Image (cartoon, rainbow, N blue to C red; front, side, top):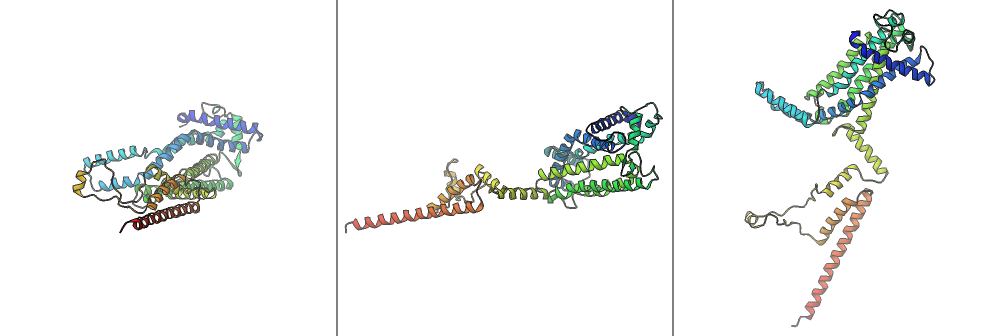
Length: 394
């Protein structure tokens, strides 16, 4: 196994030694101690930064999978009970078309962990061979890259809460090692569970949270299986490997929390909370809410109807009327109605920066002016008609 992982083992050792030298340069004590523990944490952060593009793809793929769940369920119901080869082939083709439509991949969420696993095993083998390197008993090599015998001895003597980095629950009889191992396994399991719970509880639309959704069932199953898996396998890992895994879980949890908070999936609980926070911020600045701004924009673009009914036309008149002739509006109300419509259109473009009270007050003032103008116009027309009737000869 060391032969296969040797290039990665050298790379892991090089990163650890380089980070340790930097920490010593900025003031951390040389030799065994906290600097080597921090070098493993630094190795974790270095690897996570390298796979950041994969994490972005994972988030996009996860969002696409969430949005396509209603269509996927409809497709599964469409071919439910059809087991003939032709139906299975059509179902597979339509499913692949659905993945292309949403630009997602069911395996994209596995890429970050698959990339980390070789690094994880390489670190496991580096820590497992520290004693052999320190005592010049390592076969075929007197060092692991820049990790010489003297440095290997320093790493082996470094501890986390009294537990050596190279010790594990199974190969040590010290009670301190066992307690630290159990605590770190619990931390590893809890952080892994919460990371997965963020996706299934906060960043999924309500429409896909039902138990009939296969993706939701698999997500809940993974939330149960992964902590149990870590509980059984963690006792085999060295303390240094557990430090690496707890750190990467904390990194993933924080990274995912930030992503869900800033870029939630449409229709999810996280999106509702994000919009509520944004509306509160806008209210403090005297700006309209997101919903009002979106509606004003839609009205300005003509995508929202004004609610007026179009006058129906008889079939015989439909044949005589030209195709491009304008359709008459049945709502031939008073002049103030048309002015109100104009004012409403003006409000939709000038509403940005106004509070709800100011918008309502301006609307009331415009309508009051329109009513006064209409009343004055009717009064003037009534006076003219009286004068004309008096001048008419008998």
